[in-house]
Image 1: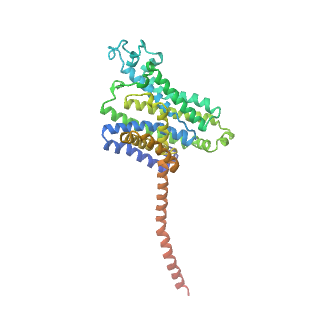
Image 2: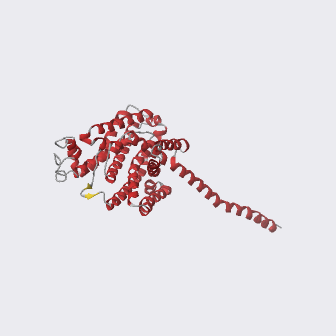
Image 3: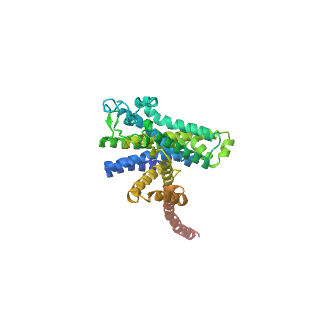
Length: 388
């Protein structure tokens, strides 16, 4: 039982962190925010799925990807295609020249639904595609890169180039993807209106529960053999390879898993916000995802969640009050964190708790030491008086 507890919660400290996060997300925020602000928090939490994936990939395995926005966007597009087809039934689109297809296809004079859209009439297929499509793309990228031992800065630049290529490809195919406007006007999920307050509450709590479940799953994985191998790969990759482990296979697996988690975040984003566009796929969102992971702490799963909440809240405030400067502020925040606090918020919190624990331990020992100093001379004096 203790082993199960340690692996699932990473000991008492991990259980305490999980309890605090659960109280904040499931009790404090819903009771203190109106539905508009709570919906914004829910949107920010969808980015946290990318953050925990980056903790796994960057913090634990030492592989920095600057293209995680691609996987977030692909998961979002898979879910958006299902929602758009549900909203494009022949009755709702009877005023179009071709009823039964999405409106942007009709505007671009398409006369039939493209073949790759057809399976997305099925919700189970779309749900599976949210995970499988990003994971498959990551698998092939990883297979091409890691088997050739491409890593470090080169891998980061290549993932950034892939993000640019895919965002331009989506942008340039308006008839198939909605182009720059993206896929919009998503209203229902399995017949339920996703724009109602009740649905937004349900989606918020669903996002929170899924996020906590993902953290527990990753905590379980990292506390076992996989976690030790990832850390060894990050610190001394050559030694791990010489010990007989297939380093490239581990990297491909972790990269694919992080991509699947990003896809889940993208799908939840679409359901909560009601649209998806290329602006969520390209270089800028990918770099922002790295920034909030660094701010929260690239070594901490919980830090990534707090980093996503803090940076995106700051982004909203900065962009509202300083529209010309907020990008510089975000860049300055990233540089400041990397230079001054390389382990982010989680590292600061860990240092504070360690200092507090040391101070508390010293306080507990102090009375014992004082008592020893007082009692020892008295005892010595008593023994001396008894001596004839």
